[in-house]
Image (tube, rainbow, N blue to C red; front, side, top):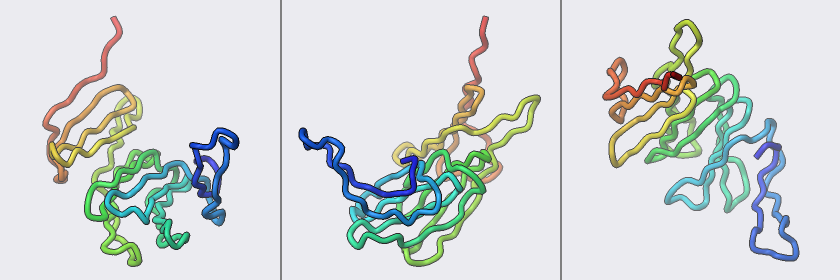
Length: 168
């Protein structure tokens, strides 16, 4: 993470603790997140500082798909289920990316623009989707948290809001 290469690091070598195998160095922008894809051991997903999401095949060592999801940095990526990913960009937008197969172009949908304009700009800074509890939890840069039902329905009100802590 932080450069333009994909490597597998061998962490169990005492004599050569920093030994790695270079998988690919043809990436145009620095990588900022890498996740494994559950139940699909041949694939990983990574995001770049330029807002790109890519699917990489570890078995054949090649990039299968790369798409522009956000205009700038992707802060967070989460694999949800059935080739569905959520990403949060530095623009405060939470998006879903649905792949039917990794070889086909995915559908990208804005879930919600989580920038709320107040006296200061309030942006979504993190999120968690909990499938088993059917919850979407959003954290904001002012310390507040909102909890929604998952899957999210547009214009739905939060189930609960924790407001930021005020200093005494």
